[in-house]
Image 1 (cartoon, rainbow, N blue to C red):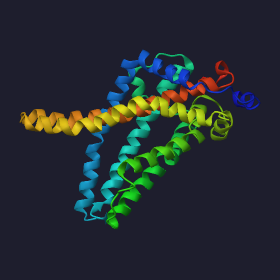
Image 2 (cartoon, rainbow, N blue to C red):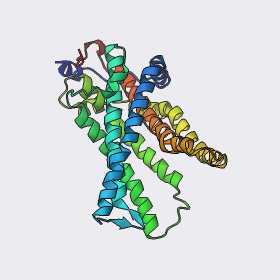
Image 3 (cartoon, rainbow, N blue to C red):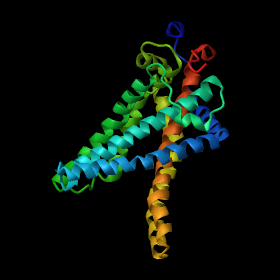
Image 4 (cartoon, rainbow, N blue to C red):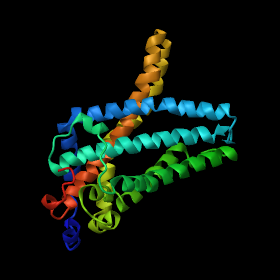
Length: 294
């Protein structure tokens, strides 16, 4: 088996950070319109998913089921994050597989890949575990701190919202290298222990992979931050123009959520492509990997 032959191979050479980041963006740019279609489709689905979210929230309010802390409804928050995470998992996972299929197997990605569900190996189980450790744990910690501040009426002077955001990303950057290589291994190899194999294969390259992820994520992160800064002034500007109600509805009910959703999925897409490119460089015999899509 492929996994047996891989286990006996020594640690790989140092992972080239700049070259791998450049390889990632070359691939994404080469197939930019396909991946733009992926982003658009899942941003639209994320927007549509708000409908059942509103219905569930209204149902709990109608049933008078409440769980309020510091004036905020935790039930509404739980419903929101549950639907958001399910959409991000499904969309991010399918884009990861589409991108991996293109890089690993040398195939042309297609827009329909964004909706083509693959059940391969233990990929989806490991993806759920990855999100639990890398994303859900810091999210719960950050939200818990914010609730704590609200309950005790504490001012976020030294621990501002930016510090909480930094705490989230510090945890993600530290935890991701421990498990992230298990995703392509579980998808493209017949390995019984993808997490252990990914940890072994990253020997000597864990900090390099973390630095590579930070470097690759900088452009979409800057776009996301610029969007958050620019959006309020633009909203005030268009509100002062007194536009027709239909245009306001399209701008605030459709355009703004679509752009926000596409930026969220863009970060996932870039990081996923980065992991796959790093995986290709760290795989000892890349041409002998199991081709699960063939």
